[in-house]
Length: 346
Image 1: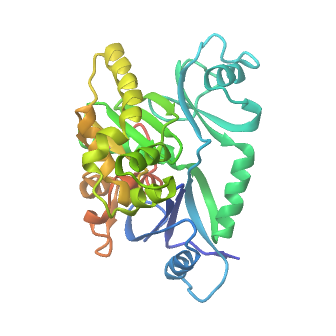
Image 2: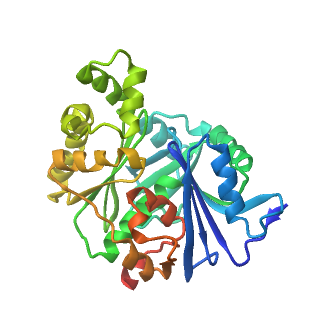
């Protein structure tokens, strides 16, 4: 049994740090965001309570139909340049994937998008040179679908949360008339996905093998703790001010980011204007400002209210705009039907 979603819209994001939910007054704009909730990945009690509150018929059993954004350490979102003369050549795209990204293309479910506007690549024409390869291991997609069903969520549409976040950041910049390139970071436990976006779309993508776990031994060493587990608990607890230690904690990650930024700025002549971290849990939000400070750029302060209103999305009184932060970009991005005309509508 599926819960009817005729008059309500449901949006669900599952990333490596937690679950985020939104209920809207309609399945598409114009609509009102009536409620936004979140809980931990393993908090079954909180998940059940949220589902009960969001369920329009409350006492019935079944699944909630929802637009779903998912994340994975194995996600592939990489920009590449194609040879238009070879695009329709059999095996060429698999060759690009295997050689440039070092993955087995047969093990992945992949999509090909235009880098400038995010639209599906037109294989018949094959004239666009700059593209974005997106996807996940096929087995992992099946696992994710099974997990969503276990969570009581029936995926009406399944998207990579990263793509929703990138689309939202680009659209927000277009609305704000912000033409400076933005560094978008998704800092996970083991890896960091780094992107540079501009009004021209996705400019740079990079996978960095430095994440939050790499900072734990540094915490242990700097504070003289007896083991890494104690350091990890303290690091994630938000009970200690790590801002003074930030330069040491992010030293290795910073080196990789500076390399990418430097290459981009030399190639394009443009300087990064701001940084935004779209994945960090609230307790680690201070890392965004710390990284921005070390890079000498501003941390993006999203102006969510006017931007959402321009997309015919308003916030109910139960969802104060002050409660929204950069980590909500993916969830909000699931609500917006992006198109190349969005910026013109601002």
